[in-house]
Structure formats: structure tokens, C-alpha cells
Length: 157
Image 1 (cartoon, one colour):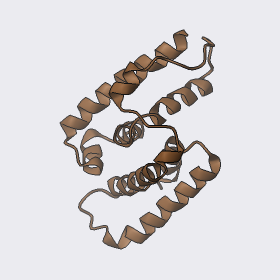
Image 2: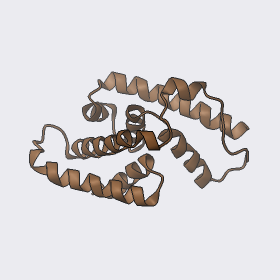
Image 3: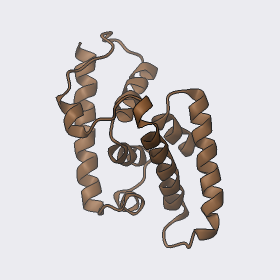
């Protein structure tokens, strides 16, 4: 039911195909192990996303020393643009660039953006993350603006 969404989530946290498969497996195990604790206080979809993001975030945090340094929105916004200088990027390449920008976000910002891209509403994202719906909407607006600016800066180079 949520297989493709979980695959997209795993690819957003990991670039290596083997690590994506490992992360998916870990997410499925965590979902299975915590199924008995699901009390229905939120939707099944919200619960699945919460477990999946918690597993993914904890794996990224554990490996932080061996992976590229994650940056916050302010740092990403202030760093010089780098990337492909070809102005005629096809849609696949553009998606890869966007995914790379999203992967550079800190875990909470990445989680917000991934849930937003999955079509999850602000109230449900708030349930997953523990933030208010208004705070979620504000943060998503800021993240989208920064990502769009960075995306276009890289295109112009």
C-alpha cells in the first residue's frame, strides 16, 4: 500500500542502491515490530511515515561521520551554487538535482519536504514531526523558496 512512497523516501535518504535496499528492509522490520503498539490515535498513513522517517533519520545520524555534512537551510541558502552548467537538462537530470538538494537538508527539513512531496497535508505532517500545522506550513514555504532559488542558481551556471 505504501511501497512506492517508502522507496522514494529511502532514495531521498540514501544514494547507494544497496543502502536504499537496507534502509527499506530496516523500515519494514521497524513497522512490523511496532505494529502491535499502533493504537489508531493517528491515521495508518501518518504512523507509517513517522516510523519510516524515524528509522531513516536515525540511520543518517549514526553514519554522520562517514557521509557528507548535512547543512541547515541558512547554510544551504548562503553557500555558493555548484552543479551542472548545462542549461538544457532533461527532466530526469533536473529531478536528480532536486533530490540532491533535498538530501543536503538537515533531517527535520528533509523530512518535512519529503512528506510534502508525498502529498501529505500540513496537519498530518505535524502529527509525524511533532510540529504545529502552522509551523509546518511556514517551514515548507521557506524550504521550497530556498530549494527553488538554489535549483535556478545551479541552472544559470
